[in-house]
Length: 130
Length: 348
Ligand SMILES: [Zn+2]
Image (cartoon, rainbow over all chains, first blue to last red):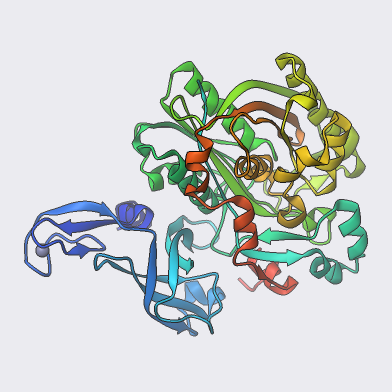
């Protein structure tokens, strides 16, 4: 699949944080799935995740994949957004030594990756200290 | 009644002080601070650009307007730092807020005037009845050449305005544009940094167009400086908006709430729009506001606004501009700034 097609396909979750909420048991799937892992139901409502949450756990990446070497060291965190919804994303604009579990964060729209010097730009969500 | 139904701003968290830049280039910091009335400026994080700043400013505007984004009929971003040379910034913004696909979209460019241009057109389309709601954003992550006077001011930030006819927080009572062909500041295709014509950027450029537009709209509206509570003029540095305000007959008290450049820098297309946002943060129902933008090349758009009772319902639904400027500041050194702004040559 081309980069552009992948980017376009993932826009609902990367741009708007659209998740699937199971109509049977209420499980929130992010990114959306076709079958509920809790109750195996196949019907979901589209919900938009809140833009505030707390840090559930985090780690610091010191040896980064080649496209992210300029950003290292950087933090990755699992953010608890309420109703059991969790997202894994980069935690930016923060002091890496000061990050603590339970800290409140805000979700912001950021550039995720640039495809080389002349390729397409990827955008999506990251977390910043609230 | 047609006017602003929601407004929002976004301020990046990183800062660099005038002293830190002056130190690297052997310049005299006190004379820059005194001469240009600048203390520090915002610096975008490496993952921020005009699109990301526009998205955050618009989210704050939507919090205040509380409308269905699918009903926004036009999305305009004015900037001189659109991330792509070819591919609109506005399409990404429209997609993020859920305004696609039934929407008109364009990017505007006119040096620092691009934001107010979008406001002018979005307001016009709402007034004409062609769209229910119109969105206009002024945002930039501008760069001055290393060591150039512009480097002390070129900052990042933006403000977004939603226009409509119901639950209006500030009516637009009059508009006026003043424009001539004036080569005071430019950037040629494929050039990284802009160039400017030194002292020519002052009297024949900024001051001529800002006073021409401000006097033009006041004459058209039959108003004088005493009829306004607040005035916001484009802020290329701290000094120019103070000087032009005094030239026009405004007092320091009328200028103060929207005068952000000493601690924000020049956010180019975001400059006078952010000043307007900051003024709306403190304005009271009935207050009259004059906003005058300036874009090199050159032109000035002016707006006369009257604040309504609705302001008190929405003011605190999103963070105020000065609160954003004060919160979570992170001072960086010139090396970090140079890395963030891609001023360092790396091996391919
Ligand atoms: Zn289920």
